[in-house]
Picture (spheres, rainbow, N blue to C red):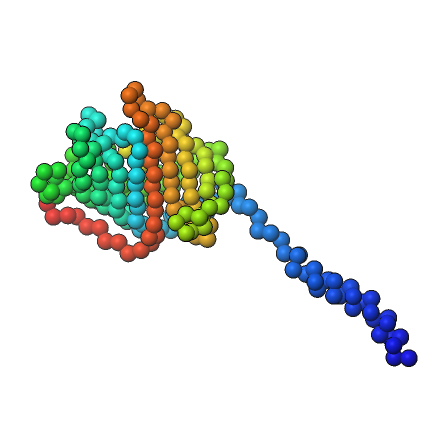
Length: 238
């Protein structure tokens, strides 16, 4: 007589077992973020950033002066909000490459003399100020607001960090203050890598779509690291 209730419960137990076995498949996959959503998150995160280390690499002809005699090849240094920066810059001059140090304090810029190595005020027509990266209108925040036709290339590993890779275009006028008016084309093509877990901007690559006659179209690559690590930038002794 005791077998009857157990037999009646058997279908219920079978259904319950099936439900438990299938329970793990009810989780919804993480939705793919939209390109604009990633741009907005990166902009918000960048506004929280106080310091960063940067490495700038340039392929092509990017001149620092109106005469086209000083060509910026690359630079590395630190950035400090709101308007301070250091740079160890490689500059092409008269067929050779020279290394100079630069300190930017707002509108004041100092650089080491090519010959003596001593600090002095930078020339008035020096057309490069790394501190502009933090400027809300002329730096990265302003560029992010003007991005167009942005697509998500995919998720990649950038030096071991999971990152979203975006691609699009931006008006030449938007990048001119940050790049020292280095580009000729309009619009400028860009690639952007954003940290998947942090929304930190990790890498920006700008591709010129034109060049002056006889010149090579420029590619401008900015890598940001050491986000919000302590930095001290002061006026050098002149």
